Length: 158
Image (cartoon, helix red, strand yellow):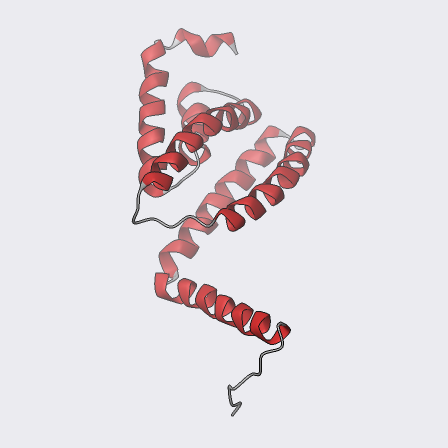
């Protein structure tokens, strides 16, 4: 691990700046930039790169989230954030255990496949189509909630 510090220190700062810009502008986690850079450019092992990216993610994501929170044009739902955090905390315990048991070369291939699949889905799926599903889900939830409170359903079914 100390071998990576043979690179000039400022190279890691530049990597951080690039990861921060891309993360802040696109909402990507640091892993999508930091992990490939550390593995491919700095010869880190996959597990070392993943651990480093997770450590970098915490302060970077916190600052980014606060900046988004301060933007009056952006609505962040605290309940949804809390639910995702609960799931993410449980998931990271399982994921780190899984990562500790899998060989680095397998993790690298799975990581690459996940990035490719996510990129293809985002490229091929219309933003309106994805949002419509969320809107319909929220409408159905409001209908269910209003019915649970004893209101009548005036919608006619065809």
